[in-house]
Length: 236
Length: 156
Image (cartoon, rainbow over all chains, first blue to last red; front, side):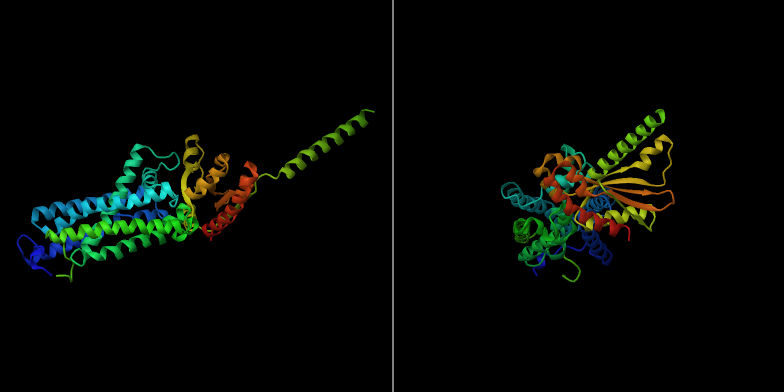
């Protein structure tokens, strides 16, 4: 691994700084892991409403990520700080790619049960009985994009310094996770979307292939630019 | 003579009553199905939500009747209705007949009875759908099975 791309463990380079940075990385990984799409799945499994999970889990986790970013910038954990920034930018781009396929599948081929961002919006605002409004749509889209950023951030924290092609199996794994989660079943699409035929799974996988492509390009570009993506324990 | 007229009136009234009962029976109103849970009200509600999810449905909304009626001074131990459906099924039913909206989302009611036992009840979906249109009755029959599974899982 190119030494010039390594992130400095801490501004002072002490053992305390190294441990603190690693803990911050681990905390960022946990915060991204618990606050993203997994909450949608937990909600659709009947454990708690998405609105409640957003307030009690997602918002605090987002606060933790923002705090880690601020601390990383101040203390000089360049690797972690830039990983968060790359996660933000690539997350938005990768979600846009995924949406392109989903919208075409939904509008042209009727292969999706509906608009996921709009559905998440009405669930987040407890408006499913009255339908979406501007605020619920905005919130739903924000949540959808945040989920994309969280998945990208998890990838970067775990595999950011490894071969960028890993983005493809990772994206397919994310897509498979969605198909076997309680979400398609709760929507009436059945396990793996079987009730809607193969079109549903094909659309989901195509959308995640595009997500993975953008993630691959983003991760490769970041490496070429020498962005010091955060290593993970055992990787440095 | 007066006695004969009285008897005649009695026979006519009895016949009329039989006719009303017969008509009601022939119309066969929606069947109300319910089961008792051995768990508390809150635990039963929690089980119901999980059972709804595991059977491919969503709790779209709820009406806390205990809370709403507390404003009248009525102190119920537990009374809450849950509106159950899913987007795919809802879309299909509305495409078949927009009048389906009169019965969907379907409703499950959880309450504490006079003996302190928690009950879950609902009207048989196929009966409700058949009341709207024969075309919907088939879809309703499918829902009968789903709701029976939910009831069974939630009251175990």
